[in-house]
Length: 307
Ligand code: PSU
Ligand code: MN
Image (cartoon, rainbow, N blue to C red; front, top):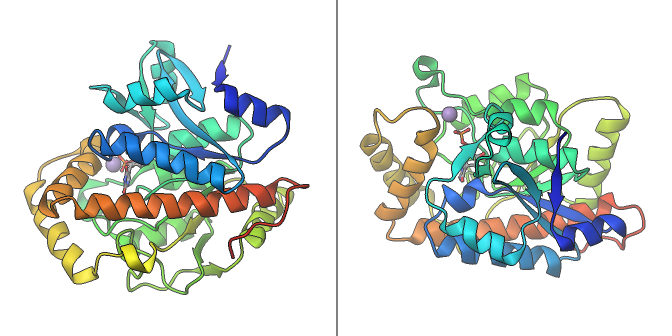
């Protein structure tokens, strides 16, 4: 009843038990403008290949979950107007109605887990929005990390969110939040959020081992690996904080799933594109670490290069 359609490359990787890294598609349709979104998606796939793994960009096309997109499908999705933004709540309805939509972190985790893929690389996760004490706006990504066994590599969470509350909710949900190679929790465009990360690991192989040990313990859920943006690509905190404050003011009154895309688009405009350049750099950095973790998750593959 549930069809997962694999790209030819992902199908081959499955047959040969090669390492696979899942990628989300909301970042393509709702996170970045065309054509940079397409260039980013293609570059990130190539980074994963260069890292010795196979990329599986996940999306819903005409009511079918696609695990890995053929090049022409990726090009079409990047230009699709009005693709839906699909999270846990929307996925089954989109499949039942033959819709086309992009998967968020939560929905990508669900599809990846179904396909037996243990690691997923993206830019930033959703989290607790500022003002959540009155708006109740908390991304379904956090609950998903608590229940679906996929290790998600992200550059932390954006400071458009309330980062202390986001970390509190993840702690309550029992989600391991692991900063890679530093003690601080990274804040997407900046390496340091000013908050200590709950956990730190410096080695992709150990991250893969922790993923496997969680499963052996019978613990549901995944891990959040918070990988800081490379130093050369970082936007200083005080610079980005100004744009964020302006974007939040400009987007006051925007609600539900519109909030994140609208804030991202506004910050892109305010930064004259600098936020997008940094965003692409950090996704590529996460793809490289994701590939190393995926290789370590496959028993016979050579030791990962990162960490
Ligand atoms: N954060 C980003 N870029 C993104 C997103 C979040 O920096 O593109 C997307 C991801 O797909 C994430 C989703 O899963 O937004 C979260 O949306 P919401 O807050 O509506 O759950
Ligand atoms: Mn929300």
